[in-house]
Structure formats: C-alpha cells, structure tokens
Amino acid sequence: MTLTVTDLSVARGGIPVLESVDFALDSGKALILRGPNGIGKTTLLRTVAGLQPPLKGRVEGAEDQIAYAAHSDGLKPTLTVAENLTFWASVFGRNGIEQALDGFDLQGLRDRQAGALSAGQKRRLGLSRMLVTGRPIWIMDEPTVSLDKSSVETFADVVRAHLGQGGSALIATHIDLGLEAEVMDVGPYKAKPHDIDDFDGGFL
Ligand SMILES: Nc1ncnc2c1ncn2[C@@H]1O[C@H](COP(=O)(O)OP(=O)(O)OP(=O)(O)O)[C@@H](O)[C@H]1O
Image (cartoon, rainbow, N blue to C red; front, side):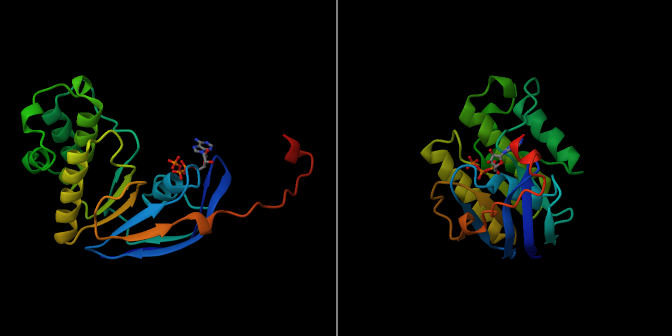
C-alpha cells in the first residue's frame, strides 16, 4: 500500500501555503516533514488526512487507511484511560486495547480519568490511540510535544514496530526521533505570492 501525493497545493484560511507538493510513502517507510513554524506542515498533514480539501492535486491510497494524531490530544477528560481507548477502538470498529496500554506504558494508569493525567501522560494516551485504529498509515503532527526523553524513545519504538509490520508513518517534527526515515523539507514548496486581481480588496 503506497500513499501517493501528486502536485498538491494546500491553503489555510483561504491563503495558499504550500504548492505542488509531491511524495510517495511506501509501506514499511517513514517520512519526516521539516520546515519553519507557520510554513504549512499542519495544513499539509490535514489535507493528506482528508480533513480539508486541497486547492489542487491528488492524494491517492489514503481512503480508510489513515489514522491522524493532531496537535491536540482530544481526549475525553471524564473517561478513564482504558475507557478512552475502548471508545476510540469502537470508532474504528475494533476492540482490544491491551497492546496500546502496553506500548505506551499506560497499564498503571488505566483506571485514571484522562483529565487527571499529566501533559506527557495525556500525550502518551493520545498517541496510543493509533494502535487501536488498525489503520496502516499513521499521520502525526508534532507527536513528541510534552514527552520526556524516555517517552520519546518509547514512541520511536512503537513507530518502528508499526513500520516493521508493514505500516507507514508521515510525521511533522522538529526533533530527531532516531528513526530510519526519509526527511522532506517543505520550505521549497512555499506558495509564491499571488497577484491580487481585486485592487481595492487587496487593502482589506
Ligand atoms: N485557522 C487558521 N486560519 C487562518 N490561518 C491559519 C489558521 N491556522 C493556521 N493558519 C496559518 O496558516 C499557515 C500555515 O500554518 P500551519 O499550522 O500549517 O504551519 P506549520 O508549519 O504546521 O507550523 P508550526 O511548525 O508552527 O506548527 C500559518 O501562516 C498560520 O498562521
């Protein structure tokens, strides 16, 4: 299964941010996106994940294949760790949360309400949801925010295992995860300023 992105242009708030992006992501591979703050990495990930339409171009091989971990964890604070995972699994028509609890060292916290977790623990729970989706393509936006060194290593181990099982990962991150991965700088895809047709509107 290959995710193929062809001539993709993406916009945020109606303003083009990246243009003519091309890449292919094969199973068993990881692709790391880099680029300065505000360049459009999140916008690109959201578009590839199907959360917003492209301005132009194609994303192929994505349908029902992608699990997306955004900046925010989006946890249900009054549910326990185990209940959050069970809920998330059910969204994807699956059950079985033990691998996710084990993978992110959450067994000792399984009965704790998510709202009472520390920032790093919340992040681990948010990321562990990828494991209950059964989806092969993981798209992750700055997944290591709030994680300590050992949790970053745990996360990298989980991703490595996922790749070893034929999964793939597209990750925007500023840090070195220690993964064997291709790195793509999105800087060269920065959208060029477009001429403003509406002269008066250009001042608004
Ligand atoms: N909701 C929004 N409405 C309008 N513009 C937005 C919105 N969210 C982000 N932007 C703008 O879109 C551009 C691309 O933002 P994006 O979040 O994709 O960048 P990024 O590369 O992921 O940045 P970072 O590394 O800081 O996370 C930025 O200029 C940003 O200010």
